[in-house]
Image (tube, rainbow, N blue to C red; front, side, top):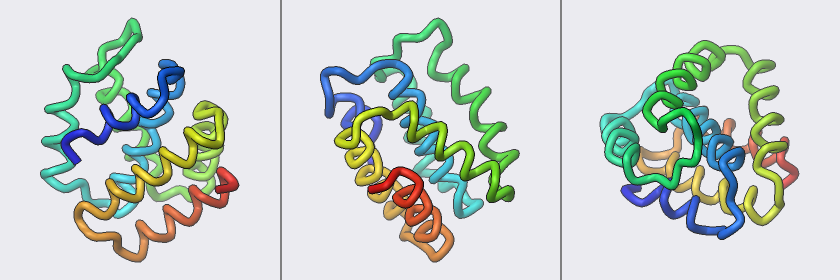
Length: 131
């Protein structure tokens, strides 16, 4: 898990900032899908914040500080979750990149064991993205 975001961002030389932000949103949504963010997941986000190829006027830390509350606010609203997944799908772009993102999301979810609700979330992501 220590190289999670770095691996995702390195998987395509044509990855752009919009895709990076979509990946982060997808990962955060996945992390909060079971309503429990593990200490390992939190530590990982803190450790990676300075190492990511982040090309935005907003720092990665600030991006997390604004995105995490949004994700937490919708975690119990199935319609808003679906809308966010649809938005993430649009921003990710290519099917190859979507497939890589889903694979890595599955890896992230399995770090603390995929429980039923995470499995349902993963199925929903795959359905929305057509993967």
